[in-house]
Length: 126
Image 1 (tube, one colour):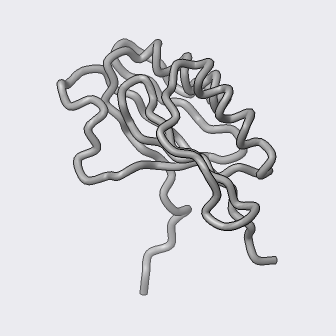
Image 2: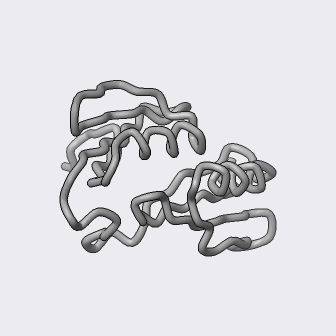
């Protein structure tokens, strides 16, 4: 019998500058600080109980080590343009943008450390 969990709840990323990462993810996603000490930061994404952990150090920052990307699902498809503007304004780089199928937009971007992140909207079955 499979174990019962709340699903995948966090990701931990090595970054060059915790404060820069905090400012970027606050501006783009509105994350809230849960825990902050020298070299370590945990933030929560609004609308969920998900956590992003940022740890300073290591020359492998931005290298995903087998993880292709991680993503955030939009609540409203019309927010894709606002997301693109927030990413660019915060210092991210959009690398791809379009629709998977009609009315299901997506974009991929690189954050300040070079991690690839996806924002997309998906029509969910009722």
